[in-house]
Image (cartoon, rainbow, N blue to C red):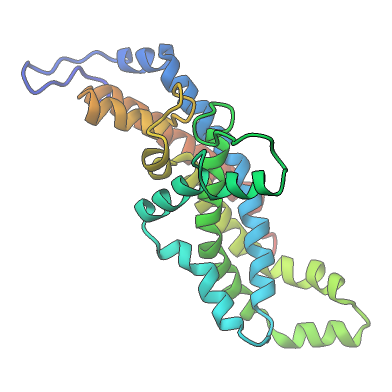
Length: 254
């Protein structure tokens, strides 16, 4: 259908690459594609943060189960609730600006979601905050599967905690790092829900992503072939970057 002029009120006609030419000549789609690729900057922060949290909650400390549950709460919270909560936080008269102005860190309220230079990064932060708990659980499961005798042997050989982390833990985590990296890359390229709830693509289309453009064309303007062409492009990027992750993050041991 992405290669046709499909319509409910007239016969379908084959148009080849016409829909693809249209979307790549459209400034909104190009901006959305750039923003989707910009979301990939979030991936290293998600993975490093999730590994750090997993190492932290893997210790036997008082109340550690409470901390594990607290870090996982954003994962099971619906996007609409997350959007409403962070919408209040980012509002010009919201909690974040109140704290910053009270501490005299800013002179006037900041338009976190109304400033086209800040809005996309605020959405990226919300996506990062919401995804940390999911990847933390995956890394925690991987950490708990690392054989204890390997750690004990390294301790007997005189290895300190930092050496054991880099020489034993990280190599044993590489399969999980590969899987989590691919999943977070795909999630970043398919960013849509947070954009829809927080900004609806604004201000000035600065938070449009490629997938949100597909939604806008397909369901708002009923231009289904253009929406499918945009989705096709997003899928191609997802497959290409996933293949790169598999190639360069694949564990070397068998």
